[in-house]
Length: 362
Image (tube, rainbow, N blue to C red):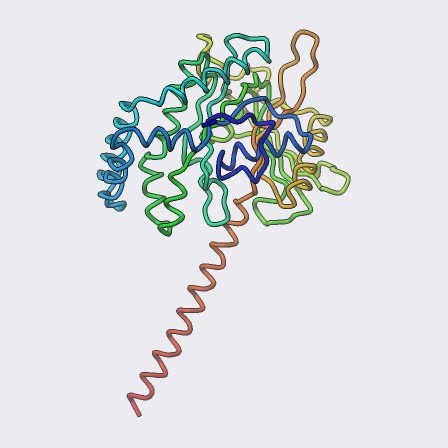
């Protein structure tokens, strides 16, 4: 059984095996977009893990016993499930394949202790019915095969966080089942000087003629988590002209830990806090890449990107870390339709009730 698949071999059609995040990374590579190298630990690896002893049935029992309206139940289920996942051995064949794949990644990079990001890639993530983005965990600056395996296990355990269990409880049974399938992406880290997100549609209004870019110093984790207010640039897709820009005061940045493992948040130097972290040429380059991605996928995209540091005579460059269908505007539309539908239903019910009252009075 093959439990590892290289990003370069993946396409969107591989999503049932490697999840939305990993499949999209493979699709980006196929489209000629620069993406840090890596591999997926397939959903089959997690299924092989859950087949150990009674783990699968024990996890089902824990989740099904939860009252999702009670935070104490959710916390208790999370603790019990996490302890089970931590105590269950990973099949040796899965371990061996992860170790070999990480070794090949290190060899290709010329770094025997290559730092990697270990990212959950849910099978239901960013699907048509659900969006699991952010429900499971990501671990940055992971070094060494042993730590990679530990963090793959941690990603599996994140299927059972309180928020993930509560979210699944609201889903139809067949969708909830699919959402318990998970792959994990292992991707070479980028020592980002600047990072952020880009939307190829206005997340505020749904206007597809514009795009928005957010950027801040350091790794993108600070932007995605909301720890920092990033610079913001709005562009017209026609000509890629910047129509509006806001340079924020950026006081904190996420950077690699001085220990060589993990990341830390530190102050931005005083002379950089109020300085735009993207030059006009970088904004245009990123916008051009984002347009290419949108054209490839045929729908608006939510993109995570990073600009590398210039090192050893090699110039800084922009790479993409993830791309998924934009959901912020889609969610707003859905909420608006739900409110409109509720209002219409209430009005209709009122008419019926009044009509009924009139009949009774007659």
